Structures are given as structure tokens and as C-alpha cells.
Length: 336
Image (spheres, one colour):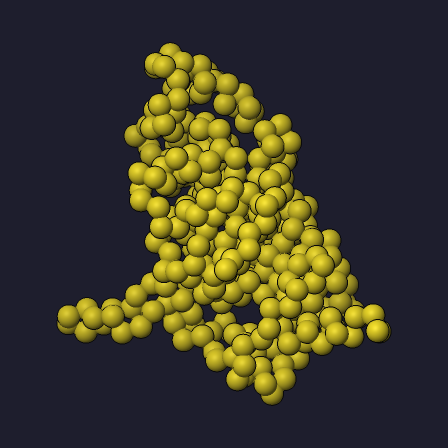
């Protein structure tokens, strides 16, 4: 029986999302890409949980699976204690308003045929928020002011705005239906560094003003340290470590987390010489390694790592999926 946290806004347990591989003339299923392979996450109201990892690790698929933009293969998702995974589209619609997404490329996220007014008002019309066209237009003006855009520009088209302005429009569109949570999928990675900082400051201000919760999907660890409350590190479809942001950066437990942090550029020659870089390339999610998925790239691996799944070791401030973490916990335990 799954025990849920009474304080959680969103909980994910055992989430799996596999994509079939079809081959041959008859296009029969010959295997699966295990994009998400048993993910557990707990997100609390008002926090920012950063989901980090290399490209292809399954981060974006987690976000899309939560929103049912792709169908999960297994596991479950709860929003405020209500199981969402196997709800009908009609039943899920009630909760779809509560969780919105801001995507990586604002250019492709906005329909070029729609004015900004119509793009932002689309959710208002879909969920019947507001009585008429005039109320929708007034609400769009308020939303544009909240993201520091001139409401007079609402009659223009997306191509008339810069990349940073288009991302502000996407944020305003997501906020239009008054969600409790935003999934930000690489929401700043397509922007210049100076514009990234502006968007992060905007998201911080909106979070404080609207009591928003964020699942912030990114590969940019510099952004994570500035922006996130907690961090979940993902590798080849699995969460390998979670914890408070500062502890993850100063005292990481999993070898993969250490390798990720070591990949951050540094001007310190001593740090460059001693950083524990990952070995080789990321294996294919179509054929993940047996045992610990990270063991082929891990300089600290044990003989058993190639045969046995590592335990998920619970600490007071998070988890670590590594046999070395189990030994660390035992060593830190007070003597009887």
C-alpha cells in the first residue's frame, strides 16, 4: 500500500513511460525505450523542485506524463491526494487547469495565426472563465502587466516579439487559468543569459505573489542553484538522488551527482584536476545496463553494481540510489 504525504501538492510513485520500438514490414513491437523507469517524486506547495540530468535522461517525459500529454505505462500520480493517472479525459480536465506547462521554445509554443490576446485568452475560453469577450480582454491586459508587457501590444502577433517577450507571453498564458503549479520545461535554456536572469526573477516574483509551485526541468545547474528549493537528479529514467539545493551542491552523495557538478566550468585548476568526471557515454534507454544503470560510467563502482539494483537509501533530507550511500548511512548512524 502506498503511503502518501499529507502535505504534498503532487506525488509521483513508480512512474513508468515506455515508447514502443517497431520494426519489420508489419511494424511489430520489437522493444521499448524506457524513457521513465520507475520515478518517485514529492512536490510540496510553494516550493521549486528542480529536475536535472543530461539530455535524454527522461526529464521532459516526466513532465509530459504528469500532464498526460504522453500516456504513462505504469505507476500513479496524485494531486492533493486524488489519483490522476487513469482518470478519463473528461475527469482529468478538472485537474488539468491546476497544472500548466511553460515549454522550452516559446516560438513553437505560440500559434503564429493567433494574436497575443487570443493566445492568452485561449485557456479562459476553454475553461469558461469570464462571461464574455470584453472580460477576457480585460483579463489578458492584467496578465500582460503581471509579466511586464504592455497590454497595448496584445493585438500583435508572436513573431513581432523577441524571444524573451514570447516566453513572458507563454507564462501569462499559463497563468490565465489560475493554476496552483507550473511545470517549466527548460523554460530559460533557449534565451540569452541576461534574458534568462530576467525570466527567473519574474518567476520568483510570480511565485511569491501567487503562491505558485514549480517543477523546474533543466540541465543548467547554475540556474538550479539560484532558483530551486530542492533538487531531484535523474539518470537514464530513474531518480538517483534528491535533497535540498545547497546540500546537493556542497555535499552530493551519488557519484552521478558529483560528476554533474564537476562538469560545471571552473577557473580553478585544482578543481579541474580533481573533479570526478563520468566515464564514457550515456547508455541507450532501449537497453539500459543491468544492475545499477550508472555502473558502466562510475569510477567508484563495486563488483556487485553490475548485477544488483542499488538500494534506494533514505536520509533525513532526501534519498540516494546507491550502495555507497547505504554504507555512508550506516557509518553515520550513532552507536547503540
